[in-house]
Amino acid sequence: HAAQIQGFFDIPVDNLYASPIFALDVLNAFKGREDELIVVSPDVGGVARARELAKRIGCGLAIVDKRRSKPGEVEAMTVIGDIADRVCLIVDDIVDTAGTLCKAAEVLLAEGAREVHSYITHGVLSGPAVERITNSAMKSLVITDTIEPAQAVRDAPNIRIVPTAPILTQAILNIWNGTSVSSLFDSETLWPIYEGHYSR
Image 1 (cartoon, helix red, strand yellow):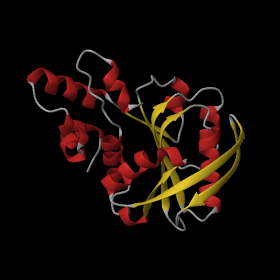
Image 2 (tube, one colour; image 1 turned 90 degrees about the vertical axis):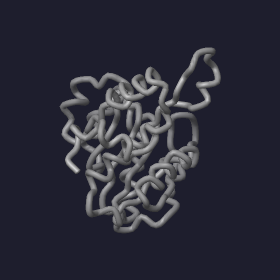
Image 3 (cartoon, helix red, strand yellow; image 1 turned 120 degrees about the horizontal axis):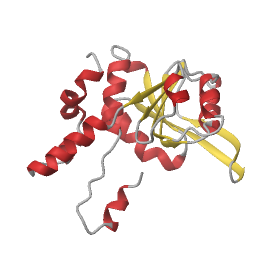
Image 4 (cartoon, helix red, strand yellow; image 1 turned 180 degrees about the vertical axis):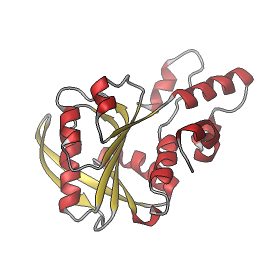
């Protein structure tokens, strides 16, 4: 969730990232449509994360600037960037009740986006989240299984779960064998261990 956590341990700790896994998923799910894609940060604070994925898949970046009138309540959303007739990929680190995420998807479509998909690392998906996502304007939500998905999440028609077991297994093997864990930050390196989950 935060790379800085590595500094709080007196044992070796490696921070693994979802962006190379998501890049693999995007390049497989949107093969032949790469020029239609634009990555969207749902807030200004997530720009670095969104920029990392945009760089990996070779596309542009947009931002949803949201202002809150009080904690937990979104007052207004403004899109920064040209998303007209583009396939928007919202990227974030965590989704809980999905209210803000679904609202962002509505705003993007209202601003002229062709489709909206979301890539979120940690899927808490509490309360009305699954119902909101199922009934939302988003075509798909892709999460990892860092949090065990409930059956309702697994059964949702527009939620996909990308496993983290392959990258965790390879990280353990690399550490055990004394080889670099940073090689796992590269999507091409990850392809062989995720090959069974995708058809290229």
